[in-house]
Image (cartoon, rainbow, N blue to C red; front, side):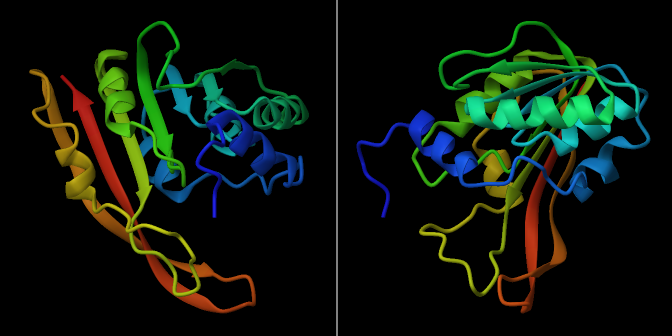
Length: 204
């Protein structure tokens, strides 16, 4: 049970304090699938965690700005980028209050979710405004949870995620809006099929 008075900053600092500073270094499969064929430009990651996706993009030639609410996450991500020998601009933002300046050819939000209530739809609408012409906004959310999950609320389907952004501003098109299945390993070695809700939007 989460304390109703707990701030998002405190929650996420505690979350990352409990984690190893060193991640597995593996980028998200959805990120790879939707971006590996793109010409590198300016990229923004919303909720970068320990930085695996940001490092992968930087290694492929993207100029990456990576954002997280947690100072500890940014500390871990910065160290991971240094070990990888890549330059990434890290910024600390509560995205419900502030947003990185500029326009981006790619904005990625992979599992930008929280057990605490927060206004994702407004964050994504702001992201639409910061996407450059021809740019891609890629949103990946948890869809179907594994059988051992104790997540307290139902996840949204891709169409439900998209519905929170409608009506889309003029000049936007939906490139992809579906659930993508994958097999997930559990804490006791069990396996289950889960799905990710993926929405990819292109600015024309």
